[in-house]
Length: 57
Image (cartoon, rainbow, N blue to C red; front, side):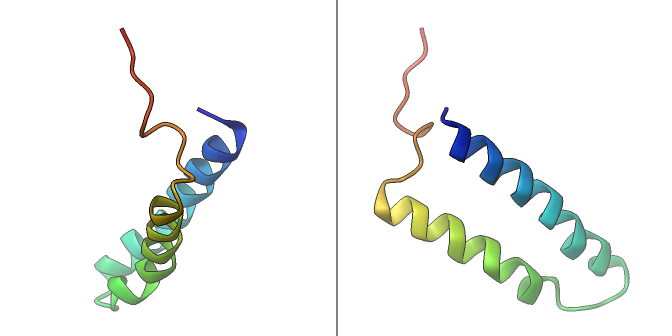
């Protein structure tokens, strides 16, 4: 896993907390999750996620 992937995962997990908190307040969490979905979808389409193709063992 590259450093870029690790940073993206940590930032994504921290950002994910905001929509999670908004679920308790009745807000539209999907709207807040949309940037994460777009970002990871873009990286997946470009083949820029290094840990998907790794084989362990």
